[in-house]
Length: 121
Image 1 (cartoon, rainbow, N blue to C red):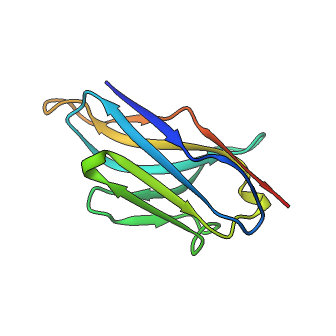
Image 2 (cartoon, helix red, strand yellow):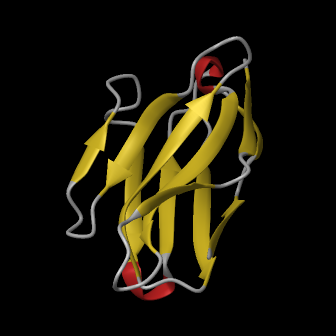
Image 3 (cartoon, rainbow, N blue to C red):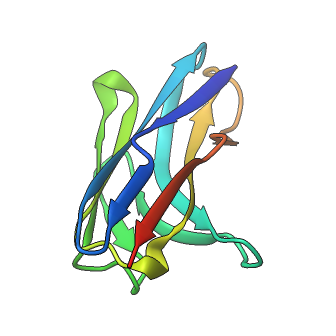
């Protein structure tokens, strides 16, 4: 039983910055990888960035050098710092986490409800 809640979406001008946060709450044993995905209208959901429990990261080529993912395991939180935003970044951003509900179960993938990021040109 885990819930993911996203914060930080909003409207910014091109070249600006936003910081997204996602907090996992509820009852669970631990969290493995966490990440951010995005989906624009009429588009498939795509990976933006992921981070493992050992802080190994990977990024989509389109955001590499502009976005930075980080996490705080003690707070069960994953963040996405987005700099140099472009109109093409406009999308709904979804938090993702691979959650181990308890010590005797396998991990399951959970999703947040999404937060809108709009970049004006």
